[in-house]
Image 1 (cartoon, rainbow, N blue to C red):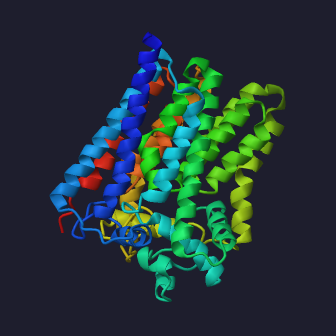
Image 2: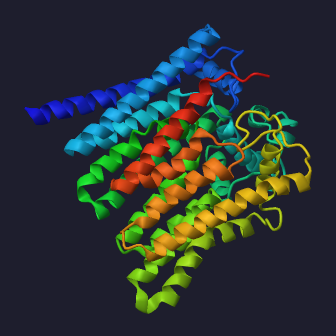
Image 3: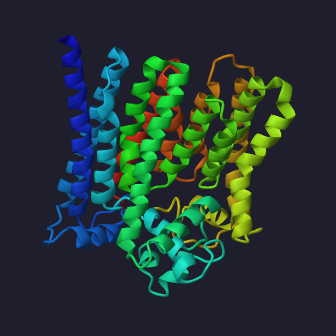
Length: 456
C-alpha cells in the first residue's frame, strides 16, 4: 500500500514536470513581438514554427501575461522535478520499464512542439550544414552573415558574424544531416537537429544510469530519472536544439564503456565529444589517471593509445576540412565580442554580430580569468590524483565546469548548465548532492533570466 502511494506521488511529479515543459512549448507561440530578454529572444524562430505548425492566426499575449505564465510554468517544472528526485532518492522508487518511453515521449514532444524561441543556435547549426552543402563554403572560413546576403533563410535568422565556434565532428554531422535530407526545407532540418538532441538525452540518461550502477546500484534508476527529466536538458536540448546534450551524452557513454573495461571505444566516444565542443577535453587527463590506476604495468602504452583515440576525431576532422590556423578564429571573435560588452543578435554565446575591439584590452580581461581557471584545474587534478574516492573525477568535472560558467564564460547561458549536471547527477554521495543543488540554484537563475525584460 505504501509502495503504491510512493509510486503514485512519483507519477504525479512526472505529470507536473512533463505538463509544465510542454506548456512552456505551447506558450512560446504566444510570445509578444515586443518581448526581449538579456539572452535575446528568437522571434524569427517563433514565426517560423508558427507558420508551419499553426493553421490559424495566433494572437500574442501581453508582455506581463507572457512573463507570468512563463514563470509559473518554469516553477511548476522545477517543483515536479524536485518531487521526482525526492521520492526516488528517499525510497528508491522508480517507474520501471516505463521510464525510457516517458522520457523519450517528452523529448519527442519538445522537439516537435517547442519553437527555438530562446536561442537561434539551432538555426546556426543548420546554416553551417547548408553553407557546406548548398553553397560549397567552409564554416571555418566563411560566416552565416555571408550566406544571409545570398538570401539563405538560416543565415537570415542567425546572421552570425564569425566563423563557426564548434569542433569538426559537429560540422561534419550537420553537413551530413543537411545532405542526407536532400531537398527538405529549413524547418525539417531544424526539427531533425532537435530530434537528434532528444535521442542524445536518452543516451545521456541511459549512460548516466550505467555509471551510477557502477558506483552505487541503488541509485541507478535515480540517475536515469535525474538526467532524463531535468528541465535544463529538456528545454535546452530537444526544446531549443543545443548540441550540448549530444556532447555530454557521448562523454557519459564513453565513461560508462571505460568502466565496463571497453576503454578503446570509450575513449573514442570521449574524443567525438571533444570534436563537438572542446570543453570535454578537460576530463581527458583525469580519465588517463583512472586508466593508469587500472593498468599500472601498461601505463605508457595505455596512456598513449587513450590519448590518441581522444584526439583523433578532432585532428582528422580538421584535416578533412583543411583547417589550420583558422580553427579557433570563431571562438576568439565571439569571446572578444562578449568581453567588449557589445550588443549582438540572438544567442550571442554562440553567435552574434562581431565587431572589432581592442586586442590589448580584451587580453587584459581574459588573463585573470584564465589564471583562476588554471589554478582551479590544477587543484582539482591534484585531488583526482590523490583521492581514494571512486569516481572523484566526475565531481571534479562538475566543479570545474561550474567554475568555467561562473568565472570563465564572458556570458553565462542556461544551456551551459548541462555540463556540470551531466556528472553531478550520476553521483549521489554527499559531493554529488551538494554540487547538484548548486547547479539547480544556478539553473533556476539562468532560466529565470528568460523572463527578465531587456531594457535598451
